Length: 136
Length: 174
Image 1 (tube, each protein chain N blue to C red):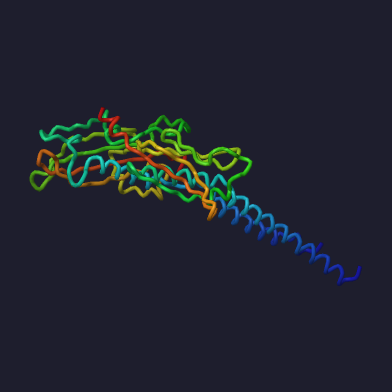
Image 2: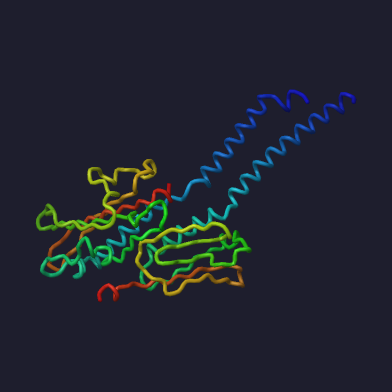
């Protein structure tokens, strides 16, 4: 092999190794940033805080488009469920995130609804106060 | 292979870059979102709405005779606060604390009045001013805030109401 060919091979290996290294780093960053569990936590806490600040009679809409985009289609259950004062967001088959809210309100209805015109899903909650129950 | 591909210098540079990227990614995505400060403020506002409505203390809290309708037992129920938490990290529904102090304003100086509290009182350090603790620097502490409002009671007196709230939930926020 002449000297030029040898130089070319060495440089090619060098470049390929570097490319492989940075590709692995990029994949690592992408996997971490694309992890649905980050959104599960963010939305669970967001909804819990909104319910903490909610007052009787409010009807609250939350745009959950980012979560729906990351939703694992193999999972067919509820994305958001609220049991007692515990909000749970689940976007994938394995794992979920729950966070409690202190505001002692009951939700008269809650559901997520797809808006087919814009492809935006919206989550509605309607808390009501238990004033009558307490005063009894 | 030349020295270029396997040189210690080059591996050191690659190691530095990889470490920096991993560190940044974990510092950005690896830590939970800390919402305790906001939760604490909402809790204080919730209590403030309970003990002060339109600049007056509701009769269910303070009656015309100057008697208090709340006590440590019914404070949470009266103010619609639920201290139940998720059943994790050995939490025993003890991650919140609420305290309300009523001081009467008859002259210039407030006369100390009763204090009602509920929740986990260990979250509140009575010997220190929790307002001085910066939650960003002391993440292992519960986050506590103190709010003061003035209100008029049904007994015609003016009251300084001091509301203190604390939120634990360290494991899910730090």
